[in-house]
Length: 311
Image (cartoon, rainbow, N blue to C red):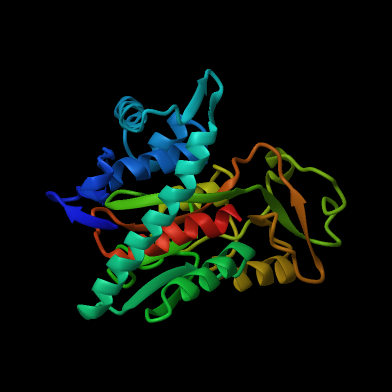
């Protein structure tokens, strides 16, 4: 028989109770430690796992070593290039994921019973991709009683209403000012230049930013996050029409011959071309929420989003 026990803020422990007649000792594993292990097992790298958990690497390494000592088994084979799972580690990963999902469902059910039965999700209008579809289907299967309200935002607000308190969590793209927010990268997409198909550069297999020098670009409204604006302008000041939505960007290219950037995974409409662009960092798809927010509906959304975008 298993049971959950809370011991102070943020410290939940999982006890596997075995009848006294069995006279078997079983270690007490904190859920936090299991989350640490799952992050390392999924990233297969302590540095990436530490960044994902928003912590430094030494305490993460100590926690996993402590878990191995408690279990009396080596869970990870460590090397300079990263880590690999041992058979014991693979077995624990399956069990840990199952346990954490059970805890997640329990927290969501409690929140729902307490009256928190809805979640407002902010999204950029370009988020109808395979990852987002998998996320919607998985969240619905896991938490059918939660009403999810989607609030689409334009290109001027990459935080999708988080800073204004209009949404609980955002599925969006970076980069943007992350102060006061917790941001988790789900995927990174290469980008390309959006051009008319009759543009002299549209037939090229690869472009450099220098190839687009002197061209008019679409721009975002005044007050747009500077990090966001700089990225989509290729790091340079640009001149051109102001746009607020994806469709306005495409129309600016179609009607005015302006250029701009877009993720390569987005098939351009007829009459437009998307040419891969060298020298640009891939564009991150992220999930973001207010820093310190303990809403279990948000935590469930984030966990399911990570799995959905992992494919």
